[in-house]
Length: 576
Image (cartoon, helix red, strand yellow):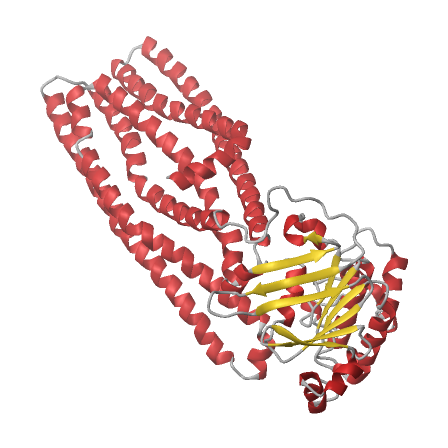
């Protein structure tokens, strides 16, 4: 309930719509309560059979006509306004959940599946529509109806009214019991739905590997297992509902049977007339309808609660990397980078970086080399503050990056990664992704620097060519050069290249190397390289081993020393 109340606070912005929906719901309930009263009066008038009774009957018929006309209006306002408020709230919550997830550190994404996060943004937030458009209006309607009908029943006959409410305690007990049983099942259903989304996302992303290795049958089985688990959890929850619904119907039927029996006996004794019995039976149907609807209401409530818990779990997750209190705007920089005794570990058991210190002066080309898994990528990720050092400091232009605003820090840095990600859109849109104000000539200039312009112009639609999801219509080298053009167009003082030529052919490597050489001196470049040919002309080469810098110098000096760098060079002239 605390979780639902938290969400209810978010709905304050739509209080006007909800108030109008609630007022319409109350008016609708009032009309429903008035109907049986007029029907009872009509029955009493008809039994008289005189002309005055006929005129009164006509008046009642006219009143009922207009009441039911207004019922259409109030039904529309009740449903539409409640749904409008509910879906607007869902839209807002989806945005909040997405924005919160988007701000998480890379560490969080390492531990959570993308499909599960997608399910929380789309599926779990969708359950709030049930809460505000169905559950809350129904609770109000049912409560007002029950209280109103009880009052009217007592005014007709106290004995019959007391008989009517006898099943209520038993219905309440059943509701509490079944609610306790179905709530964990609804949680499991939401989790299994998220598991399906996670597996589908993984498989669609890895469809090339699935088909290449002939694993369609295996992956179909994995998806089938998750589908089966979802169905099992859903059926378990529905089974309790299938027992609960007829149980409630039986209990309400016992109340009706008791009323019919006692009502008939009282009529026989002359203690109640036929018109009162008719009115009582009509009100009785109104009384038990919301009571019987408690089953559906509980199912919807448990589903909404399960979704709420999963959404709140995301919103309550602290942001790993965020602006600290007192942080300030970094402003324009020259691109000087300093590492001072930086240590880092993902957990307490393994050290990734151990006392790393170096300086990259403005405009320098610094290369990081070494075997796989020695901390090169972690080093460049610390510059952008995707992670924070366990100890030591990273500075840009003398500013400790932990003390500056994150957005201002990253505005000084452009990244080109080995696993280049391009968005589904045109080449021009991808090159200008980080510079919304770029003109066509700026895009072309950046493409020429990145040696991709000629390739683009050979395509039928040029810069308007659609590249497909993740750049599926392009070669690996083309994607890398578009990524370099994107970084060039952003025009930041720091450029980070994380193995930008690791998966391209020799000719493409030469083109990328030529582009890098053109950029050298215009900005500070930090490049991770496996191919020595791409970093031979670097101003400084840092050789990493087991999280430490073990060598430092230019290519010729390091070769002459005959240590790790020289050994790596002798293994392959192309890759490290």
